[in-house]
Image 1 (cartoon, helix red, strand yellow):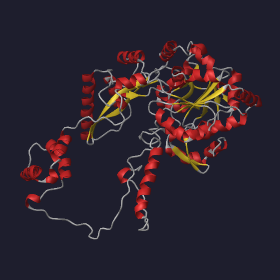
Image 2 (tube, one colour):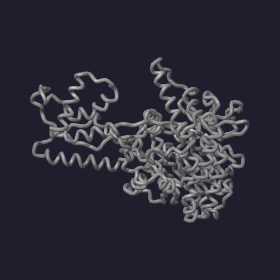
Image 3 (cartoon, helix red, strand yellow):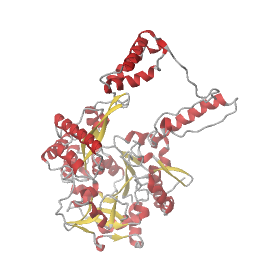
Image 4 (cartoon, helix red, strand yellow):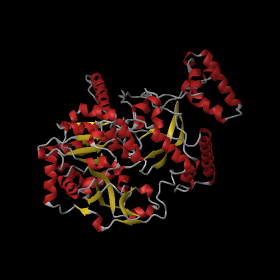
Length: 580
């Protein structure tokens, strides 16, 4: 099922008396498996049970003559459109063949429906995906689309204030590696005072864990759209475990250790909310008896027609393969056609000429914490747990992280608004790191670096795991706990801080399907804002701790699993999780 019609499959031999029941049972077993894992695994097709029989004759052929000298009807449905498009002058043999096909359509019963199928191939209609039950405006309203912010992004894009070139810091920016005293190393020696202070805070109900699970794991599945949080990525302690199961198991262990229910928040997006909600209900939240809350996304982006300058920058300035002369001409011709398309539609205009799912895009994990302010989850938490003061926030694929009491204790005693965890860099760690940017210590994204090689000069890599003091973060937004029920004030505060965050523009390719295997591919522009850029705010005191790689490594690609299993990381995760 995962490989499609050309996949490996399985073969079984049954007793003749059991075979009829076995065929039905096998299909039901496979269908049930697909229903349970349809959002976690990239299924290419529904399961099929083939009942094989032995061909006594081998490969045979039949000679057809006269009016019966025709190929099957499916052949003409597939090939006639290609013939008409590619051949302006038909040979005499081809004309005779098409004339016989036309006569067969009028006289042969098996060719009755071929003309309709042929017209559908020649003039395909835009097919609406079955899951697209709502129109684009309805989805935008439901998912919290901010029209004011969108118009500001459009204005900045058209004015050249943001774009592919502007993603990078100016070439004159002074970027230096972090100094040894800029970080606190908690890999080998952890003072007992940190551990004790953290345990006291957890036992007092001051901590909640936040797992970011809004992504579909396209890198993990090489482009297939699945919910990464639900992917059974590795066999641990006797059976395959999902990312989400491991994180709940770690919180479960800590809750048992401190004898305190620890709220666990899972942030979702329009792509992942319903699958995660249904999956957790079916598995009974993996036996976690503490509070589990889903934080649905309340921020969404509407893709834009790209600016021609960004297309040219992507094609001319960024590294790409050099083709031979003829292939290069074809590529340049295609690019000119796409430039004309962008100019005709209007650079920076809304991209709406597609099914809604191809017009929308997530706008970055910066919005995950503000979403908790907008959707009422943080207010609900604070009402249910008035002692709550701290959040531990991490990515779903940082499988070794947990609500470590010692790091919480450090965060509390350091009196910081945020504390980020970093690890020492290895060659394959890509995505920026900890640096001094014009003298200010902050985390910087890889795509913001003026030169790619600067990243390899940075000692520490960002894990995107951070500890947050709730009241201090709210103060940066100009809010208090009492303001969280004022949606207008909250939205205005989020919009104000978002305007101070860097806006990264990327070009993505989207497919417009016409049906019958025909599709076009267009480049579209979308933007995102990233949470680590909060460290650039001078009024937000931030600390940095170095943690062991077991804890901070992120699993972005299945190729990492082999090393992850061999270097002790998997054993470490099992040791800190309460796995059944």
